[in-house]
Image 1 (cartoon, one colour):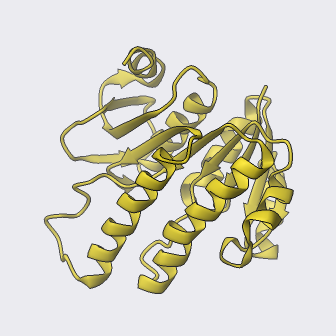
Image 2 (cartoon, helix red, strand yellow):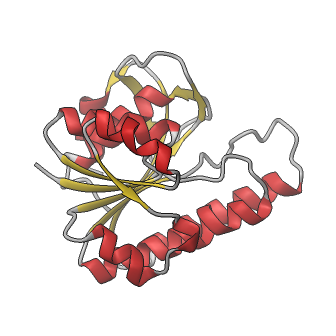
Length: 218
């Protein structure tokens, strides 16, 4: 059983992941920003850890991470603007990488963004900044020396999960449910042999476990 520190645990993907991992018997430390989020996380089986990613330095975050085996970075600005995107998706990821290294955590799993996300929509300044920051965050993690898995899901939906996905090093753009993103992340946490890989993810017809078995051989 793993001890997993989830950054962004109160988010729509992070909260689903916390519940899945706790149900699987893992120990979950769930970083959240608002005090009122603690009860929901505790009910899901996680240990709530109060902290604002944008206000923590690497030393403080490393102290919260403690002796976790894996850090999952599922935080995101969620369209809150350029400054917030830079603070969370950019500097926040850099702080998490530094903290993980300081805490002695070897593995970091990052929820990133599909390269083609919303390219057929309104590509305004905020969106272009988001795309740039996400790519730089991916590159920062790859260069960090940590073992990593970067998961790039397509457009997220609230459809019920099916447990079946399409995932590979590069695939056509599409959608995927938050349920299936969380289930894929949980399976990645449980696959320490899967590392130093970037995976693109959409809905599909292959079981999650079968797909990750194949990718582990890449």
